[in-house]
Length: 307
Image (cartoon, rainbow, N blue to C red; front, side, top):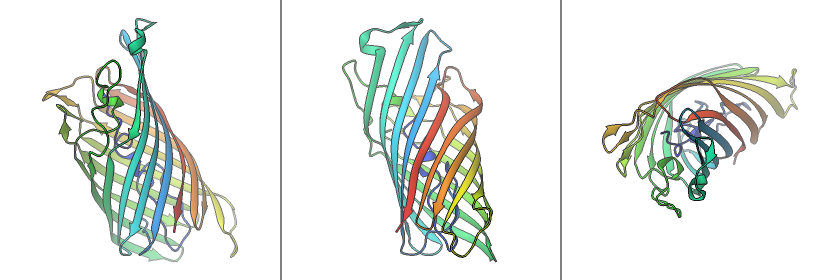
């Protein structure tokens, strides 16, 4: 059983957390960046997500469809410290098929929608090395997820299963470190993070570890001048995600958790005030436990704007 209420799953709510600096820059799409938020500046990101899971390895085939809109607001407290808050809105549908035949009408399709859990975190830059037309930043971040979403929604059949709930009912915490190396032609970002999940309703999602890397390369214009004010970047990212087994009533669930490696191509249109972006996260290797839901793909598109 895979929990799908954190972003997504766990980290994507802060994927490509917004940045602004003296240089117009790209940023990772699926995770954080170490580039600063200017003191006193606000940054807003709106990210639309389409995530698909399935499991056809047993007599009961399951397909989980998750659509979401994640809203992120950041604020620069100092040149080194930035604070962020993110809240998602989910629309989820679980389709069941038994032995190749559609289950009874009540169980054919179950769905829900609503706001998910609120995430808040701070990011502090503890290393900064600036040279002409290039910069290196290393930052640490830490935060928590508050159980603001619904975790006991019901339909005509009864209480909805955990993957369909828009909230978890649990308090979670997370922390990590992120590095950014930026030049006028390209940017490299790398991140290590860990999320410790709490328990609620006799359920505890497995803790999650991640390692991410992103390469963004300026495709256009090939030559820059003083009046160049927009850029097109190609983006290629890799994400390694490991999730421990979930626990149900204190017992480890053998059909949950596992390790997935994603490859994520994307594109970004960058100006001094906003970024338009799109990417698709594709699993290239999945080593999941038991009948845990497999990831088919995760498509994301949206914009970032600073003010």
